[in-house]
Image 1 (cartoon, protein in one colour):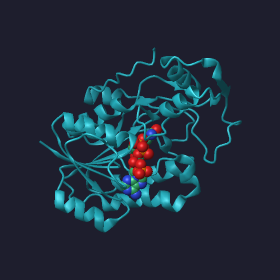
Image 2 (cartoon, protein in one colour):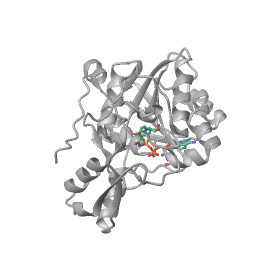
Image 3 (cartoon, helix red, strand yellow):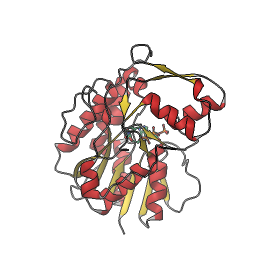
Amino acid sequence: MKKVLITGGNGLLGKRLRQLLESKGFFIIASGLGKDRLEEHNHSYIELDVTNKAQCLQVIQENNPDVIVNAAAMTNVDSCEIKQKECLQINTDSISNLNISKNRHFIQISTDFVFDGKNGPYLENSKPKPINYYGFSKYLAEQKIINTNWNYAIIRTCLVFGEDRDSNNIYMWVNKALKENKSLNIVDDQFRTPTYVDDLCKGVFSIIETSSSGIYNISGEKYLSIFDFVCNIARRNGFDLSLIKRSNSSKINQVALRPIKSGFLIDKAKKDLDFNPIYDFKN
Ligand SMILES: NC(=O)c1ccc[n+]([C@@H]2O[C@H](COP(=O)([O-])OP(=O)(O)OC[C@H]3O[C@@H](n4cnc5c(N)ncnc54)[C@H](OP(=O)(O)O)[C@@H]3O)[C@@H](O)[C@H]2O)c1
């Protein structure tokens, strides 16, 4: 059974992936910043800052994983815009610390924010053109990986959501705000293919199982405005939809620009990996 090192193992994706891969019988070495935040599991956890080259080298050499899934990142898009140096160190420069053997399967989690959002949903071979620093740092990371001789897969995903009490992902903050009867101003002019974290995990699992390489879009299939997605979350959890007000990109005061028409076409993953997202947006 393959030995898999997961970075960013305390994140939304990292935690669910650890659970899925453990259930599939993989030998997992989870790593993350600070103490382990996943309860009840049967694999080892190591504190690992991906910007620390010596630490990365030691962990990789000692454990010699067959696969590395890099789920560590600075993911707050506005913070990335403000703290650009830190963002670049974590999201881009750290790539050089994470592989040693070209035979190892290196799986990078990337984003739809590598695109400008002018004509999504995007295919794997669409031309990236990031419009914010987060997207730029993730695009440079992709380029770094592509320009190595590594055996790599780049998984691009979009607006990942799911239940995780440590996470402030859209599903969690919408539910929290509505539970507190707070009204929400949500953009209706930005479009995404929201991705249920368990669907993303299944995509990562398939990439590992099939030893696939190259770029793959792994996301939900439903193309939705963020407003419609938020209404969908509210409806599913029985909240009052009247608390959700329509807004648009020009009215929302955010530090970093957001792509307007983003999201993915996932035909390649469907064909090559038999990937079929199960999250039902109808409920
Ligand atoms: N969430 C989305 O909508 C989305 C969309 C497209 C792509 N992605 C990509 O998907 C991947 C997983 O993201 P996620 O949604 O799981 O986000 P997340 O919950 O923010 O997880 C990222 C994890 O990386 C950790 N991290 C930050 N700096 C680190 C460092 N120097 N060394 C080691 N770990 C570090 C964070 O630690 P702390 O928890 O301690 O801060 C966090 O646990 C990322 O590559 C992200 O760019 C996410």
